[in-house]
Image (cartoon, rainbow, N blue to C red):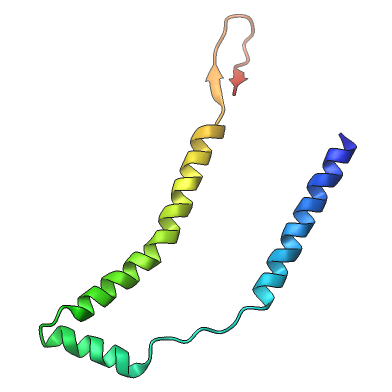
Length: 97
């Protein structure tokens, strides 16, 4: 059991170290330029649907990580929650997995 605890600690340390290294070396990203923003807003005012499509695409890309994490969290919760069963032998419930 002691060896298993060491392996778990080593894996946790390696994960945190790699996460730290990856977040320190992040490059800056370029935002949408002012001309593109102005053009998209003006096209919506003129009746074109290109700006609406751009905005819907941004919202779609923004929502996808939240949907994926929420789905994984829900499935994890459903799989690992403890089921309570009451039996007549003792007063304490028994956890069934």
